Image 1 (cartoon, each protein chain N blue to C red):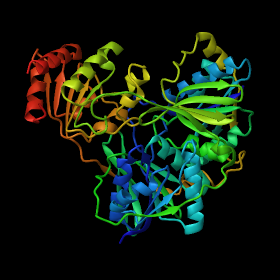
Image 2: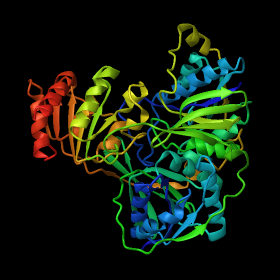
Image 3: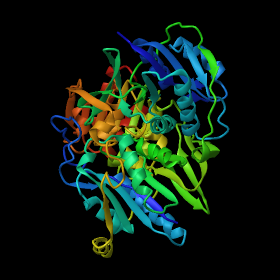
Image 4: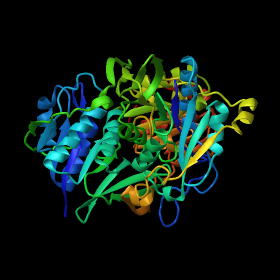
Length: 322
Length: 258
C-alpha cells in the first residue's frame, strides 16, 4: 500500500530550493501515490524542474511575500489550499526556522497536531508512520496521527538522501494568500549574512567543532585554524554559542545544524543529547576531551582522553609540517 | 509594559530520562525544575518591563501536577506573579493542546508582549509559541537573538540560515528568544524570600473551558512503538600520553582525508 497524498513544503534559497526540501520530496515519492509541493518567493517557476525531478507533480506558488516573515502567509495559503483542494494525508515540512513557523501556524489554523523532530518515515496500512530519536538517539519512537488529515510532520535535515527520479518539471499553480489580519504584521527590514570562508557547515566533508572544554573564546581560533588546514568547516556546541564565543550559525545540534561529514572532530565537547542529535550520523567521529566519562566517547571511533590545549596545537603543528 | 513569559517546569536534565510504561511518554513524575532555556525569556522580560518604566512580568505555565518549584525560581528572579494551569486531565497534552491552554490562561491577564523560549529542553517540539500566537491572533517573531521595544513596536534580530534578519513587529506580539539573548540574573537571597509570598494563581482545565481538547485524547497522535536505535559501536579510547595529536593524524590518514 501507499499513502494517497503527501504535500511537501519546498523552501526557497537564494540559489534554488533547500536540499532538505528535495530530501523530503524524495522520501514522499517513495511513500505516496501523489506528491505536490508548496513554495514561495520570486523563483518558483525556475525551480519547477528540480522540484519535478524529485517527485512533485505540481508546485503551488505562494509568490513574493513582500518582506513578510514566511510563517503566517505561507500557512494561510496552505490552509486555503486544504479548503479548496481537500486535505492531503500529510504535509512534510523541513525543520528550519521558517519551516517551524509554517508548521506551528498551520497546526493552529487547521486544528491538527504536529509531530516534530522526525528523522524517518514509513507507511503502515496506507498511513504515515513517523520516527523520532529520543534520549540522544539511543531509542527511536514511532508515532502516527490519529486525527483526519493533514498530519503535519516537521522533519530534520539529512534524514533522507535527495535523489532525482527523472520526473517532468512540476506544473506551477498560483496559490493566493488570504487576508491574515494582525498576525501577518512581522516584517523583515534588513538581512545580514555572517561571513565565513571555506565550505558550508552542513555540506563540509570534514567538520571541526569546539565546546566548553576550550576554556575561553580566544581558544576557538584553534578550531578555525584546524578546520582551514583540513579544508573543513568549523562548528560549535550550544554551550559556547550561548556563551557568545561564536555565532549561532556555527552551532551543531538539535537547535543548530545537522551535519554528516566523513570525519567529525570534537574538541572539548562532552556530548550532551542536544549536540549528539546533530552529528551522530557522521561517518567517523574523533573526540578529544579530558573527562574519560564524557558521553561523546560512547559514539566516537577514536577518543583521546586528554587536554585539548595540548592536543590541538600539536595537531595543528603536525598538519602544517606535512 | 506588561510582559507574559511562558515557562515550563521540566524533569532535571542532569537526571537520566525515562519513558512511562504504557504510554511511552516522557516520565515527568519526579521533581520538576525551571527549564534553563526559560531563564533567558524571564530575564529579557524583566529588562524590557524595567526599560518601559512600568508594568509587570507574569509567568504562565502548565503542569499535570501542582508543581510550583520552577515558578518560584522565576519569581525569585523578579517576576511579579504566576498563573499555573494544573490539572490531572493535562497529562499527555501535545504541543497544540499546550498552546490552547496557554492562550486561554494568557487571556486572563493584561499583556503587551508574550515571550517564550524557542523550544523546551525536555520535549523540544518547538512549535508551541507559534501555535499560541495563531490562537491569540497575534504576529510572532521566532529565534530572536536580540529584542528591543520602541513604543508600540518590537524590533528583533532573528536567526536565519545565513546570519540574521532585522524584523519589526507591532505589539502585542509573541517573540521566542534563543539562549544568549541576555544573561539571566541569579536570584538574590532577597528575591528568593520575596518569591515565597508572590501570588501563584492556579487554574483548572474546566476554569478555561477546555475540557476534551487537552490531554492524551486531545493530542490525536499515538506512539505505536519504541525500539532501540541502531547504535554506533564505541571505537578506540586512549589516554593522551603526548601522542594524542599523532594518533589523530594517523586516523585522518587512514580515512584518506589528508
